[in-house]
Image (cartoon, rainbow, N blue to C red; front, top):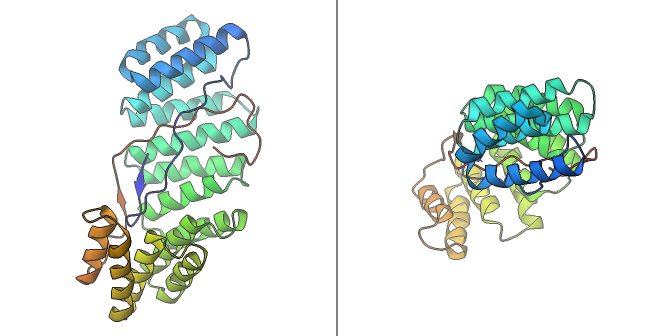
Length: 275
């Protein structure tokens, strides 16, 4: 999933961990590792391999490999449904792992263009692991995609409570405030981000767009011109700065199509750990 929120695209985790979180026998771990590698490299080839393993008794590990292969193959609704089914079938065991699975389902639903279903899955993840700021950011982005600005702001508030002074989240919240037509709060968040990272181009762009929305064209142009001095010509940031100089605001929210793979959970994820 790559959710583009006002031109800011926070990176989501890629598949990088291959230990099976479901069973710990050596044979199962080896087969899971190989299945996940294949799912990342050749998802269409991995799908029948994982499905055959599932029929042979591969359990939840095999089903998880199926889900990841579906995701990598662009079968996002099917992938989301599979992640959710695995989480449900685990019952009440291992809430941290179930939170990871619900988060993965949310990623898949966003890629499918169904932010409403993504938010539902992300809520389930938050209920299980509410001290993980990434989960709040994910749901905030889904709410932003639905232009539910108060809910997005609330989620970013929670993320910042858990990860104070995170520049990326400050910029996201600034953008949400601007879309909620509260330019003073948008300027405050963008300014706070720039006090932490003075050359942060996304924060400069957001402060420029907030100034533009507030009618301060001169201050907006200062920020847009500063961005153009920092970024390469022709880059996305340069194009957005040039649009700002023309007096154009970005569209409220848009869902992109560049997939990032859901992470394979650790063998023993810890509450509040990074995904």
